[in-house]
Length: 231
Image (cartoon, rainbow, N blue to C red; front, side):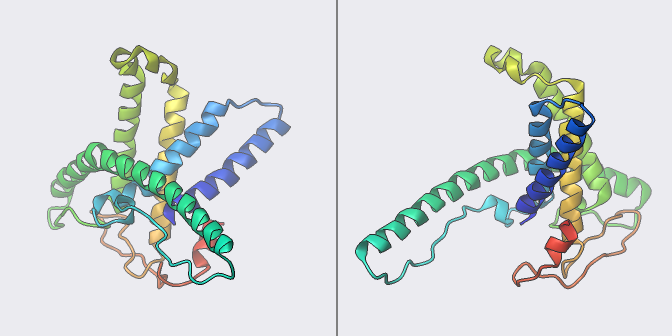
């Protein structure tokens, strides 16, 4: 839900941005639009890389039975449609798992330890533990992760050509790097806003304030409030 909703918001935002800039006769490169989607995509799932039980680390498949159909051809068509859907879901799941592990190893762990050091420096009473909806579900944790993400993107853009000359085409300008980083931050904040209306809620301002913001929304029930929040 987090990823889909963040990308929907990104689609609406980029469409509005392009329309506005076109009206003002200002051209925007397609690479910037791609940068927005890349940042939103990674940022929207990043907070949940703190938990290996998260759905981003699981293979998604539609295992529902097709059931009895009027004809064999109708049953076969539905089976083929389900098989194609599962292929798409499998490809998407593998991509998400790889990106999830990379984000966990190179963004979450470093940001967690920085968060841990800040916690014990300025708020010794707070016990910082590696837990779901812990440091990666706080505003400070997201800001730290954004800085680390920006550094990683910058270093990769600068030195990727030395790893493989064919990667020269992905070299990014400073403005493109900032665009990706800003989109990452926005995607992560959208994730936190969505979690804020869940029953367990989150603590936005840890470690400086332990106030928990929550609602009674459940992902296991049909509830339109998440859609309203995104709008």
